[in-house]
Length: 226
Ligand SMILES: [Zn+2]
Image (spheres, helix red, strand yellow):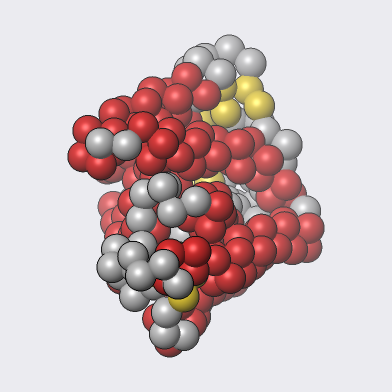
């Protein structure tokens, strides 16, 4: 998944304004992929391009135990929770950050072929939704759209920023689905991936600075942008 990973971030922020701001939650949602691409850049983790390995994605993710084992993802979640907890002095915010990091593994488990481990080796898991293009597209757009709508409903602000964000995210997703397939697991592909995550976090940070939680607007305490 790509923008589907942002669904838990939108949902968390829609459920409670105690969750971190949207930019932080976008970072949390993609944290283990950001770490994976960074590690791949320096050879700590590895993948290769195998056209047709799944119907939707040619990525052969054969070596990513530090970021994409369930244990590894849980440790990244705990690490981010500690940082958020210290910076925001709020255990609820820290917990939401951790939940959103963990949601990445669950959505990867649904999408990937069996290439995910529980603790770095042994049995591999993955339901392989990427082998079913139409359901995969419908589910990714469905959860993204539902969570985006929940976020819009629970927040208030000018309409342009979220619409601009929506357009750019959908454009990036369309490129991922229908653009040229990567030819190799090279530096250019990895940097493009990291750039796309950077754009996502920047968009979330920007949009959150323009919107307020509806529950607080009427109470005169709407000074904290979300
Ligand atoms: Zn991932």
